[in-house]
Length: 77
Image 1 (tube, one colour):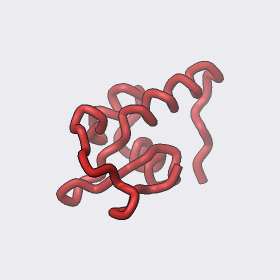
Image 2: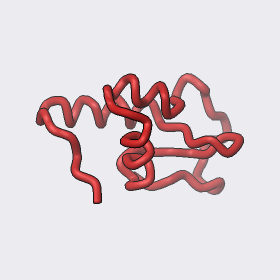
Image 3: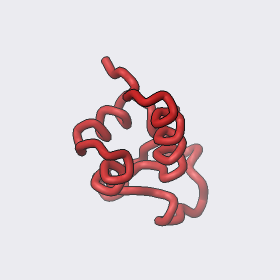
C-alpha cells in the first residue's frame, strides 16, 4: 500500500475512516511502535493530519483479518 499524496486524496475525508496510532494498536493487539512500523513499511495506508500519522480503518481491519487467519505477524525489515 502506498502513502497518500495530496494529488490522490479524496476531496472529503471522513474521520470515522481513519484511526490514531493508539486506536490501531488497540485493534491489532500490538504496541504503538509496531503500528508505526507497519505504516512506514507501507503495510497500512497512512496520512498525516496536523503532523500526526493516522491509519486507514479499512486497511487495519483487512490486515487484522488476513494475519489473524495465518496466526502470525508480518515480518518487517
